[in-house]
Length: 297
Length: 109
Image (cartoon, rainbow over all chains, first blue to last red; front, side, top):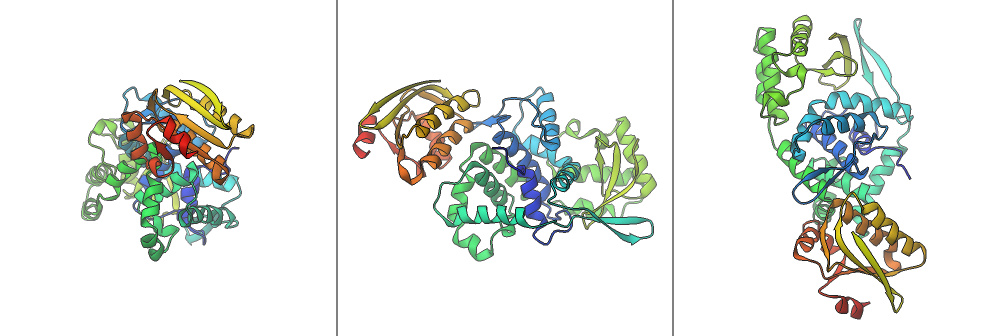
């Protein structure tokens, strides 16, 4: 039976919380979301793994926009890469994926969209829950499996693994529960090989600190310098060593990079992301609500 | 992958040889699930000739263990070192009863 929600949708819902509201602010969320995409592809038999490699199995579309975008990215790359490479590549596009995921959750009538006027020229978009049944169900499932000695199913293993390695367990458990069931959580988290491989990579990302560059943007004057610092920040944040692995909107010398620079010049913002399908730039405010300013085309 | 099934004292014994990965995990699952649906509750997987198992293969074992639940068992025996290592890394050695050989598994059944 096909699940109502994908793993990235479940992770997003868990992070949004029962009170609903805005897209998660946790700094680890972007990489956890990226890892959840890979894990869903593994559950759906598009990827496999052993103790050493991530293996490409099938590029048959899943009919889910986020999963299929990721599938296309992975299969169009000729070189076999480590899970960590794909986490960074997917994490760079996490804002774009969050939009797809929230759109899907709205379509599934789990979330609704509300526009709240902030100032006369833009509005803040919020995503309250229509009902909390879905979140409660996921939380209950995860809690029950941790508190029991039952054999978890694959989906539970994947969710627990993501929460554990992404340091997001507090979304579902109290501190006392985390301490009490630490060993059980660790055992469950290691039960899936691809989960292990991805989660190990995840560990690398969540232990990275990346605030220095962001802070220094404030003191920079020119748009060119601001954009250079954004690129540096993204490389550090998502552990991208080589400029060729950057998306074109952040890769110097491309036509898209010039459009990014034009957008930075126009708006003065660098906390931005590019939505490839919409061919549009968005400014990401600290509330993690989305504010549309203009087209990159 | 090849699977040879025999029955002894209402225990279904599966001799699995070759590799279990994403290419054949579904077939492997179908065979075991069919046995459960036909009433099997006691199973032994003899892995003497299993050379390789990927994440997809492990998932089938997990699914079967969950399906059988407390109504029966699936014992594993005769794991090759490289397969045994994968079971240890994934912590499956804590979920499954693993025996040195088929005789030991049968004696505990």
